[in-house]
Image (tube, rainbow, N blue to C red; front, side, top):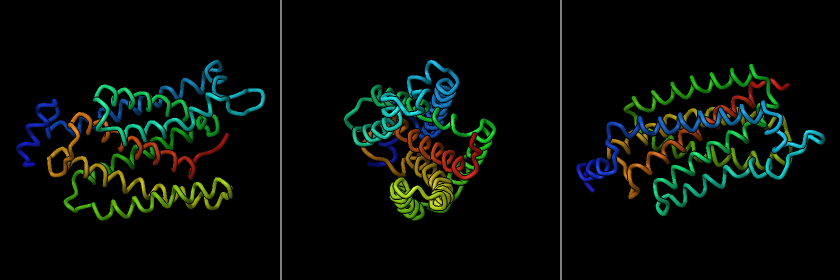
Amino acid sequence: MSNQQIYQINETSGITSRNFLPNVFLWMFVALGLSAGFAYLFSTDDTLLRLLINTETGSRTLLGTVTMFSPLAFVLIMSFGMNRLSFPVLALLFVLYAAITGISLSFILLIYTSSSVLGCFISASILFAVMAIAGYTTNQDLTKFGSILIMFLIGIVIASVVNWFLNSSQLDYIISFIGVAVFVGLTAYDVQRLKRIGEGIEYGDAPAKKMVIMGALTLYLDFINLFLMLLRLMGGRK
């Protein structure tokens, strides 16, 4: 498929190479706003909080448990069902995913102090912005670095599962430290990859509008995980 054909496809679907990446960031910011709003709402409203936590025992309710694990299901459905799902359904799933992720993050706001959450959020925002600009402006091909970072990411997931049983604070610190480095690098890599998709250098069979949603999901995950890793490293507990 030639670049001209790709450009025509993008124009047909309402997305051109000029506004592809801005649309990705727009959807990402909308998702982050939804997550932040729901996290704050559920952590400050006692009625909503009781839906997630039994205030007498401190244990999670059934809804709270479902909320904790359902975001992964949304990511899997969107990733593997992208070609089968229509754009409105994919966009709705992304919005619902952001809202439910925000609800699950409300547990974190109960553990860490407000000042440390705000500090880590600002730090994550600065790091994300710097690496996004670096990924967009660099002329160096980050593909090979992306492959290495994804391998490290798989290692982090495996180590996190192991540490779930070991409950080692030292291993948790190491995982968080490496995790910050990995998601900082992935931010630059993903922004460059999305820039190339918008320019028509790399393009799959999916319509451009769907690629916008999946691109926003990718950057959203980069930011959220970077924020969580920083919080695990520097967050002050109540």
